[in-house]
Length: 219
Image (cartoon, rainbow, N blue to C red; front, top):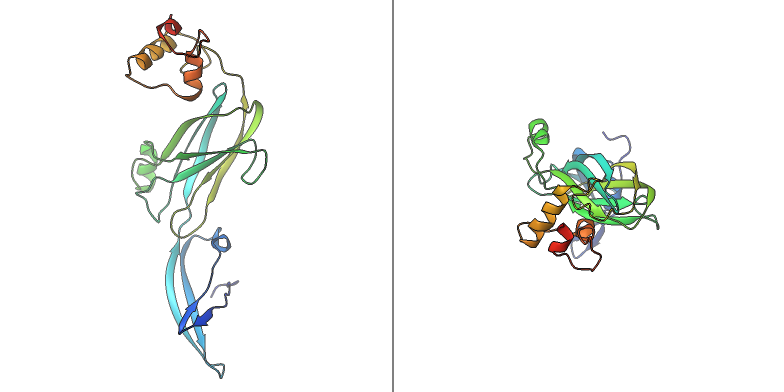
């Protein structure tokens, strides 16, 4: 028997009993549970109807956060046993935890290759996340990462880390903190439509500061 069962009253209308169960009550629950539904007659007698269900919260980890000059790079992994074929949504909060006024929330997907996760859990290859997120916050900032649940269960806090975010470095297209021939090559590939620059990388590619990325910026 469960030490602390959660009870809910059900409403009966036209022979149909319904109850509203807040998902927040089960945020910390994971595994197989039996739900018991009891019907009482006018004399206090009851009949029980057991029903088995499974609550699987997401599993994952927040591995790395790095400064990219006007942006951050986050890396980790997550999946949910309720649907291992689905790429989970990941919420990244920069500046504070979820719910805080100062935090900036960004949505990414856990859909990149992570062979190590497949080897350990057997859930498929593409449950990693590694994304560059543009932000206007500067200085030392906390970063909080959450895996968003699918199916039964609740969202999971994967962890928090601190990063010092610097100003963007003009000309640093690959966001490695240096200006090299690789940056010029990336500008050329962008102009030839072999790849596409976005976010801070695109802004840094405008080395002539004329608001247009051209071959002059690769000189």
